[in-house]
Image (cartoon, rainbow, N blue to C red):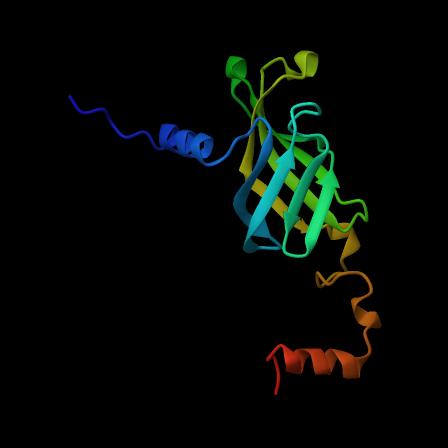
Length: 156
C-alpha cells in the first residue's frame, strides 16, 4: 500500500538534510529587505542556537543574540512557535526567526528547533524614514545621488 505524501514530513526531512542546526555553519536562502539572498549562519553548541550567532551575506556580517519575541502559534501540549528577534550592533538591521519551543518553555527554556529558513532580515523600521530610506539618505548631495543613479542605470 502506498503511503500518502506528507509535505510537512518532507520539508522537515529536507531541512535536516540541508543544514546542521545544532552547531557549525550552513547557508539558507532567505529574504533580505525582500530580496532573496544566500545567508551564512554560524553558531556553536557552547552558547546555544540563539546566542552569539554570526549572520553574513554580501558585505554584511553581524554577531547577534536573539531574544524572545511574540508567540506565533500554540500547539497545546506539543509546544509553541515563537518569533525570536535580534538587532545588529549598530541597530540598523533587525533579524527575526521562528523557533519551536516546548509547551513549558517559560519554565524549562527548552528549544525544539530553530527554523533558520524562516529568517527575515530587514532594516529596523525605527532607523528608516517614512519612505523606508535609511537614516541619513537625504544628506547625500543631489549631484552625487544623480551620478549614482546614472552609474546604476536607473536614469540616463
